[in-house]
Each structure stands twice: as C-alpha cells, then as structure tokens.
Length: 327
Ligand code: NAX
Image (tube, rainbow, N blue to C red; front, side, top):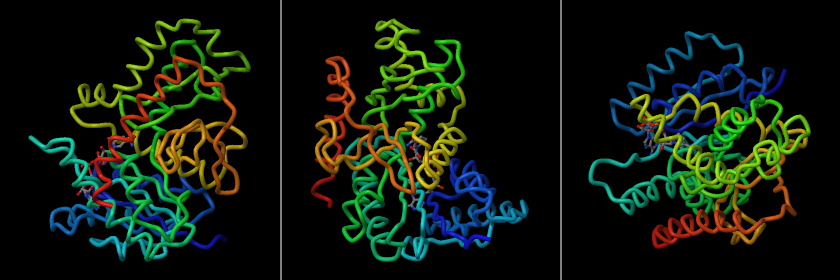
C-alpha cells in the first residue's frame, strides 16, 4: 500500500473546511488508495482551536481507512512541516467599515507569513492551492514570499468559476456538464473573470453554435457566473462553502492525478502566455499530466475576449501594486 502524504489545510474550522476535510480523508482528492495525514491550521485563538478539535473529533468518528494521522496547529511553521499539499483556505474576511486596501494588507500579512513558512518547512514539491480571498493576489503573495520553492507550485482557485460556467452552459444548451469540454475562465477570481465558451464542445458540437447569442453571453452568462457568489450569499445567508470545497477537491485531484487531455481552469503564475505579464496569478485553460500543469496555447483571442481579459488583468495588477510595498 502507498505511503501516506501530508495535506495541510488552513482555516480548517471554517465553513469550507467543514465541507472539505471529510472528502480529503475519504480519498476523493488524491485517490481511494492514497492514505493522508491531515495537518490542520487555525488561528491560535482559543475558540478557533476548540472548534478545530471538534471537527477532528468528527473526523475520528468517521473511522476513515485512509486517514493515517491528524494534527492541530496554531502556527504555519509546524502546520506546513514536510507537507506535500497545502490548501490555504483561511483568510481575513472583510469586516464592517473595512476598506479594500485594509483587506488587502490584512491578507498580505497572513500570506507572507504562510509563504515564508512553506518556503522553510514544506516539501520541495509541495502543491499549493489558495482559496482564501482575494485568492489570486494571496497566491501571488505566498509565491513571492517563498523564493526557494518553484513558482509553479503556487496556484489560485478559479475552479469554482469554471464549474459555475459549466453548469450555466449545460442549462442553456439543454446538455449535461459531463459532455462539455474545452471551457475556460480567464483572469481573477472576482466578478471581472472572463468565462469563455468559444472553444467549448458538447458531444463534439460547438457550444458557440448551439448558443449563437452574443447578447446572452455578454449580458446574462458572464454576469450570472461573475455574480454567482453574491447570489449564493443572498439566497443562503452564508457564502458558498460546499461548492467551494468541491472545486478545491477538483483542482487538487486534477493537478495530482491528471486530466487525460481535458481542459480545466487553474489560476497559475503566468510565464507570459497570451500577453499576461510574468508572475501574474491568472486563470488559464490548462491540461495536467504527471503532477504538472500546462497552459493550452495558441487559442485565438478576438476583440471581445481581449477586452474582457484586459479588464480582469487590470484589476489583478492593481491588487498586486496595492501589496507591492509589503513584499
Ligand atoms: P470562514 O470564515 O467560515 O472560515 C475561515 C476560517 O479561517 C476561520 O475558522 C478562521 O479562524 C480561519 N483563519 C483566518 N485566518 C487564518 C490564518 N491566518 N491561519 C489559519 N486559519 C485562519 O470562511 P469560509 O467560508 O470557510 O471561506 C474561507 C475563504 O474562502 C474566504 O476568504 C472566502 O472569501 C474564500 N472563498 C473563495 C472562493 C474561491 O473560489 N476562491 C469561493 C468561496 C469562498 O468565498
């Protein structure tokens, strides 16, 4: 049987954590033959640590055969020790009266510390997924704070946007998500992201031809996907949690186990593809194999798409500039 791998999860006592940990421990992320050791991080605060203990009690009570070990931590330097996977979910939410720049700097403090800790103690092959918002910029900060780790080890979650777009396209075309391929989401995990079905196919037919409605694309589809998070909050009174956890599982599973040529969306540090400046943490179409992702290159970017990509890129560059002095 396989040797256990170490999976660190931050914000482990939060809502996404509660929807995520049980699925990691049951083998849905890394495979039904892969034992895992969970290294869970919460803020040192007594209430958070107590809540984390409660979640761990429930994990114990599931008696998962693949759960080879479990630890509670209040310090990233111990939580990330030798970790093979790190899901950075915990972040500072926007509080009352908090301005955007306060939010960025509160998170910059968290993700510089966590990036430094990963740099010092994690496995050199650690695969990092940042979920905590602003996810792309937090991932960028962690990457910049971990100079001894390869840049490519740092990614941000665009998969929830990707999955949201898949479901909207399936509903519009009267087809099933499982039959849709080659869809992607460019840019920032924010309402500016650009979900793009121009290359998508469903059972071999072009989605673009099936829909054939640019007005729907621009005025219904993109706003629906972009504002889906807000719509969930409005309906549920709480932000997306199970769907976010599901997207994190999809992202890590596909990165680790491969997509067999299928496209998925990952937020990754650009190498300059599609004119996106190097290091910008940007949503791209990728395929994965043997634990490595590769950007799908050579796609035509038409005027409408270029305009949308420019908008989301500009937002990301402003976020990056907003934290530059802290790095
Ligand atoms: P919760 O507030 O329920 O949980 C967050 C947990 O993180 C809390 O228990 C808190 O104590 C902990 N935490 C805060 N700072 C920490 C730190 N420095 N180290 C360790 N733990 C820390 O939020 P939840 O609903 O779970 O959402 C978590 C994050 O995911 C938020 O930033 C949220 O905005 C973001 N999301 C990102 C999504 C994406 O697609 N990228 C979608 C869903 C979600 O909105």
